[in-house]
Amino acid sequence: MSTTLVIHGGAGTIRREEMSAAREAEHQAALEAALAAGGVVLAQGGSALDAVEQAVRALEDCPLFNAGRGATFTAAGTIEMDAALMDGATLQAGAVAAVQRIRNPIAAARAVMERTPHVLLIGPAADDFAEAEGLALAPPEYFRTEHRWQQLQAALATRRVALDHDLPARMGTVGAVARDRDGRLAAATSTGGMTNKRAGRVGDSPLIGAGTWADATVAVSCTGVGEAFIRCAAAHELSALMRHRGFPVRQAAAEVAEILVPANGGSGGLIAVDAAGEPAIAFGTAGMYRGVLRAGAAPETGIYA
Ligand code: ASP
Picture 1 (cartoon, helix red, strand yellow):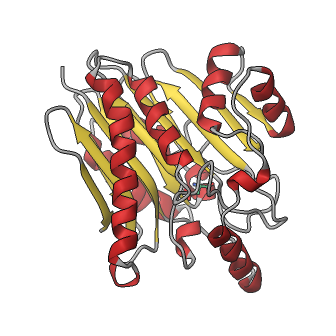
Picture 2 (cartoon, rainbow, N blue to C red; picture 1 turned 90 degrees about the vertical axis):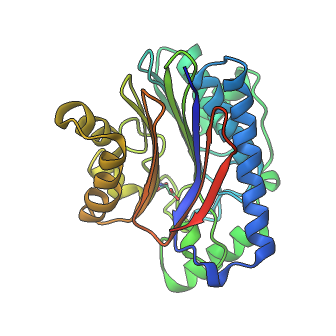
Picture 3 (spheres, rainbow, N blue to C red; picture 1 turned 45 degrees about the vertical axis):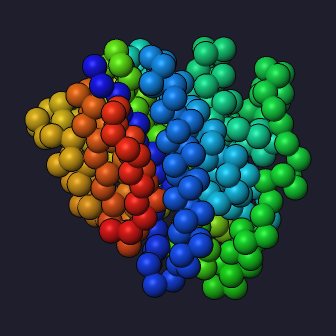
């Protein structure tokens, strides 16, 4: 059976007229590298879970995106990261929130899933857990990038809590969904959250059913104003629309991203893949960094609507 990998690098006010060709090429290359990192896992017969973890790790390591290195700052000038993944084949899930020292928060989410009886660990205790499990840590300077610092200053000046990509340098939260050769689905999401968020604020990304979800029907990863996604259990709702109302994946994705999330006071987008490997990408913003890799086809990436 054929494999599919879909990734995103955040949704927001991304406009062609405000992007230089060099910047666009840089993002495209980063998206392609992440597709390759997850794609090789799927091509070798690996699991959807491994594929989404590898794709998200590649995006966390890239300072262009708001996850891992390059994450956004809180109002307190700290970096607090959230991440989650879910295995649709087993309904096992793991997540971390408000972590500050873990180099790859998605790896910690996986460790929570596989090495504890829990789903979500938060704050310094989650950092300590990762350290005890031997995961790679990094000092604050590793995560800090100048453009994110400038975004915080701009947000503080206007008292806005903003999606990082709504501010001058627009780059986003990252996520991946995959269907493997055996038909298993998985989803992963990782983020620094929103620029100028209150310290301690947790968004939708690490909340299973809100920003991240996978079951036997569909795998979903969201990006956007987290509070709106939490209020409508966005990722799980997409699955519910498919299972209970018979919506095809694209229709369910559009319903959630274009109708439900805005109705709950936010904007954003999502990626999904169904059990047949059909990908869906939907967003109610000017743009969303995204990529699709289907077995036997060339990778596709996109930025604008
Ligand atoms: N959804 C993320 C959050 O609210 C932010 C984003 O997707 O850019 O934390």
